[in-house]
Length: 238
Image 1 (cartoon, rainbow, N blue to C red):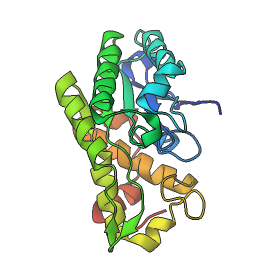
Image 2 (image 1 turned 90 degrees about the vertical axis):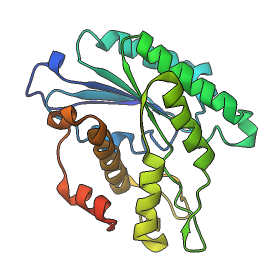
Image 3 (image 1 turned 30 degrees about the vertical axis):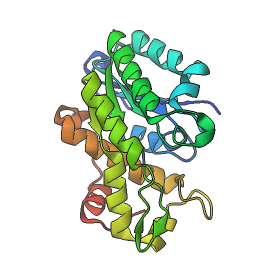
């Protein structure tokens, strides 16, 4: 599946606008992740590239050459856009026994990614894993908490900012409940991946988390108060 490249309508010089390289697994990738939803909010000359891949781990993303491609894109764009951000969200597949990746290795891999982005002239942003929408006893099963904690630890160790998407998405799905949470499923019974409408909802969630940390980007991220307010208030929206 080809990565998505999106160029926003230009209203200012590209050199004054940011560029986003999105890396990660299927929960960021095209057809099931938040990445394209996030890119749909870009404006003002901002642009982005969603190179996340279904099934990816921090190790396989590198082994398959995708990480080198992401870093190469940073080097290509640093003279054209300011700044060049790289979002890094892994965990769903790293935690699987078949991956053979310990939590310590997961954290080290994230730290290495952060340092390589910075070395290429980009701005790394770690993102904790989008929650799964599986319920037990009336609340979301927090089965990505270890990966969440290690992502936050990697950000601290490597000096990067992070967005706590796992906490935000967990709180939101808990608020809307199991039945409405299922309305975000890509396919019946798929409590991990997002349908097209949900890609936009959770892409908006990422945009709002980013704006909390980097308010100067507001000119480059189109508002959608309907979605933002619903997320803030814990109301279902699609």
